[in-house]
Image (cartoon, rainbow, N blue to C red; front, top):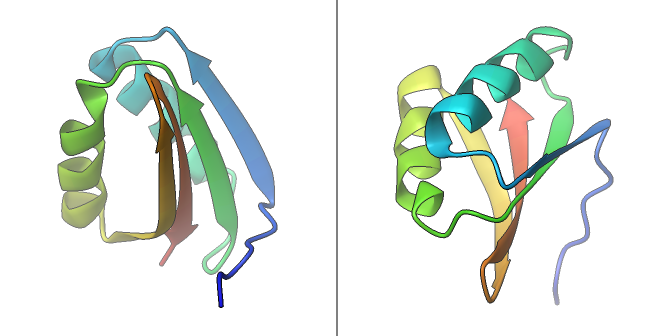
Length: 79
């Protein structure tokens, strides 16, 4: 059974590169409480691995991720 997450915040990074994506995401995560979820949408396939590594370093949990061509949807929980 697939889980469906309801995000507390949605951030559409669009065509932002990994540097801009991470900077903006860090600001967005600052507004969330522990346990809240952000949905991150981005269109840079090369950012996928970097975002996963960044989440590990920041102690954020990737609950789910879906990739459709060059567009990715990540559900990240602030721990």
